[in-house]
Amino acid sequence: AVGLLIPHNFAALSRLAVRSSPLVSMATETSSCDYLVVGAGASGMSFVDTLLLHAPEPVSVTLLDKREQPGGHWNDAYDYVTLHQPARNYGVESTALEAFTQHPEKLASRDEILDYYRSLLSRWGEAGHRVSFVGGAAYDFGSASYVDASGSRVGVDASKVVDARYTENDLPLLVPPKFSVGDGVDLIPPNQLPARGAGEGRRYCVLGGGKTGQDAVLFLRQTLGVPLDRIAWVVPHLPWITARDPPSPLRQNTCIEFIASALEAHAAAGSPPSALSSSAFLQSAFAKLEEEGKVYRLLPGETPTKFMDATLNRREAELLRESAPSVIHGRGRVASLSSTGDLVFADGSELALPWANEGGRSAAELTTYVHCTAGAFNFGASAAEGRRPVFSSEGEITVQELFQFPGFCFNGAVVAWLECQRGLSLAQKNALCELPPPPEEGEAPPLGPVAGQVGPLSAGHPLLVSLRNLRRWYATPGMGEWLHGLRLFSLAMNGYSLAEGRALVEKNCDGLVEAGLLTPPEEGR
Image 1 (cartoon, helix red, strand yellow):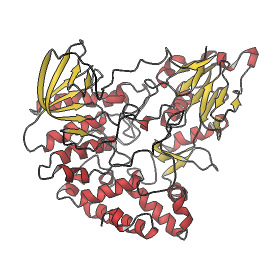
Image 2: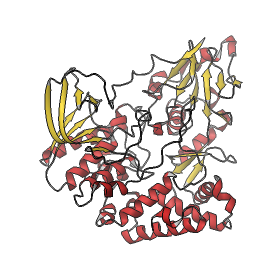
Image 3: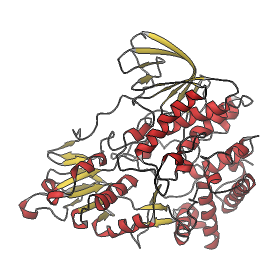
Image 4: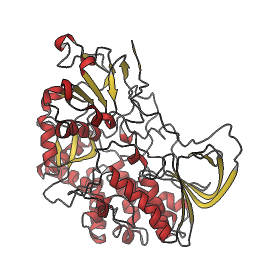
């Protein structure tokens, strides 16, 4: 029988912050602070750091997380993961992450990033800031209290509450797959690959084509030395992959530059109107970037349909391309793994793995299946919660996605900088924080949402939301100067001056109006 997976191979879901609670026990003690920040991951740590740097007066901060130490999802990541973007564009405003890594490409390891975040707590204290970190705690927004590691409930009297776990990544270790799994099937998260090894002819089936799936295949090939004929890789949507070593190795394409590339490619193709209502407009940008050596495709001759800004260098991309005979694509997502180990897809079709029944043994007996299908940017922890403004009249601040790739650390810093601007009203701050429109209401896909699809570029597309937000920020006194001195800002990372950044934004807006993708009222003139 095939049942929904509740596997022993996966960690139990950690205690999550809850938005409301109909019944809570009375707090046994109470603490107070100016800011309570819920979530000590990339967004929360960046928010706190920028807040401490720019607050007009000294503030006290309580930083709370369900994990025992800061670092968010890095605490739960697999050991062989590294940062997918340069360290010089990740972390917090005050402290360079690149000083903590030995990687030749400055791709910090899991342990290096966790060490970096731990060090920030010490650095803040040494600088005289009043920051208290509480680990192993679950916060209840409804009762303004948390349960600490000992089980005691502590009330918090905070002037402002910052929800920094709204864009928490979904990880395979903590988020079970949406597909069902037959009895006896060996399904593991990527964290358990190092313990499995390549011995005794073990076969592997990697499920998922995003960066986690790419990491798993590279680990199997490079570290465990598993031969290609013992690997199957299910890739439902072929991805565009950012080149980490383009002709200008210190530059990686940013969302604002990507829009410029799309406009240039569109004009070079004669500005066909039909491209605007399909994926052709964005695909033309990827094709242009591929010619420039800035993106890769997994399978030559096959057009990718997804982009999540995963990064590879040329050697890694070539190794994955060698895996082409092992790639299963074009069949959609897996809906279930049968008790014999066959793949059952969402359309009802079935596929046996190449080694099924080898030596009279089923695929399930021969294979370890690796779950890489969580969808890091599905934000499952907050997906069921209603969309709300970044700054609320009740004193709550919700760190959200205001600017696209790369964005988590940057968005935390931007929200904190705006919070420190006492001359801006609540309405003005929210006007500087346009959010992508919420998903259209309707029945949720049975296998969960799919992020990163390359489709038409509408006015509410996150790329255009990012562009409009940046244009507003450049028009805000002092903000452009701050952005171009910020190590987390991607245009500054790529060497743009303030004048050059402003010019690129204006050029993009003009081009989008001319292309008919924005009208003057939409783009904020």
